[in-house]
Image (cartoon, rainbow, N blue to C red):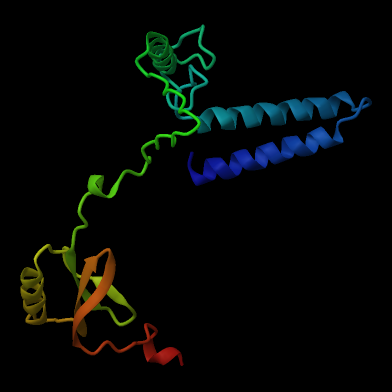
Length: 195
């Protein structure tokens, strides 16, 4: 739905809301015909705005998926998943743990976040940045090798139109500025200094 359709549809629905507030038992037929015309206009706008197919299921994950009339949400895919889970539960595929004795410490379940050994090692990168007159911005692809990043910044400083200042930032869980080349001076983006 584009902005024009959204605006027109919103206006038509607000008009209908006003008609609903004005409606009484003794509303004349002329007004009812006006309400009917406004309602048709709103329906036409709504038909123009709708671009996708009507959902076949009540499932948020698979709105246009295959239909299972016996399922609560009419979604065959989700119902198949639920049936498989129930079947596995009945067949003992997911055994329930035994109850611990009173003097025995309960067995701890695994954390959903995992243990330290399961987490991948942190990755370090070197980010080349240039001062654009207002703030530091990334000026090249983040590098995995510090010397490669420094060579890249040296080449950038030798270009015909180098930046005012460059810096190399080490990214490893946190950010640490390693080195700054040049002096970053805050410049006014308005010509004539906003005079």
